[in-house]
Amino acid sequence: KFLYSLLVYIYGTTELQPEEVEEVVKQIAKGKEDVAMTTAERLVQQGLEQGLQQGEYKKAIETARRMKERGYPIEDILSLTGLTERDLKENGIL
Image (cartoon, rainbow, N blue to C red; front, top):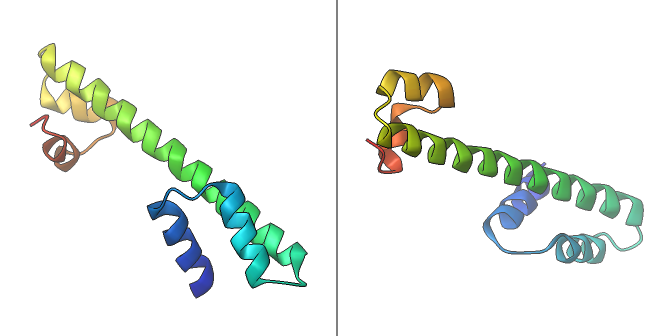
């Protein structure tokens, strides 16, 4: 579990490509390619999911920014985007 968490952290905070992660995992688990591939596939999947979540978040921030510029009430912005006041403050919208 620790190793998995460590690899997820490294993958999420660096610009490693999925192929590089797969190669590192294979080197660590020599003779256990099935385990290495499963781990690499999980890391890639998690990276893709995180990327989608980040993309959705960025889109919601941009939508909130446009809504604010057009005079929407903050309550409506929060309700329609699913963002929090903290999200808006951290992104300079409030």
